[in-house]
Image (spheres, rainbow, N blue to C red):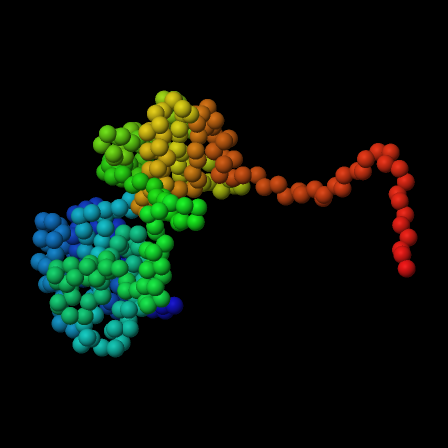
Length: 341
């Protein structure tokens, strides 16, 4: 468990944190001064993140003085642009400064927004902090962790269990699903869904191109949701259901997989079924919290009451006691048996 220092960002830094998310700021340098996190440098984007990297970051290094550097990439997620957090704490820094910067990093991440910081680096020498050092860091973090001797044994056992012959005793492997490429428009729409600009997204599979495409993204009411479900094709849907439950206002995102019976071809039914779970996993990995997953074959059942009951099912707290059934009528007197000596 890490211990916090109680050091917070000053007002100027908090203001820059709010401003720098518009895609113009490339770098923020943050230092600890007078028991506060304060802004050291702020630099605007000039070229791509790789071209700006060394020109922007290396001039911020001042000998044995530690600092934090927040550096923005050109990529983004549903929360905003992706940022790299660099902790520059050289070996020549004092023990107190090393401890101070180590224990304040969590506070900086919280103040800036943890969901925006997608990568972190701790650097102690110039060879770590330049662009080549970052690329080596990426290779190291992406490489699989070394296996223990026991894990290697288990891996070999699993390989030997995957056989080509088929019998009652043979083991087999099954695919959990198929992940098709997802269109960038869907990722953009997910960001708008989370921010409240829209509340409905419909997605379809381009069977020939084997891609998941955006069909529509808009703002609709819950009463018109059923009208959006095609009666002749399968589709994936995301709907933000705004409602109240036990006095609390909730915005629950529901994933709906609609398959209109046998009005679709066998290939379409198989593809939509196979792609569903990988698509849900991808959406969740981008920061979208799916409260409920539903499968329907008839759009008429999609109503406000239906969604509410699916999200908040009624719990039956009354459990009646077991009632012993009566015996057959006129079964005659009970037989008495005497114990034998």
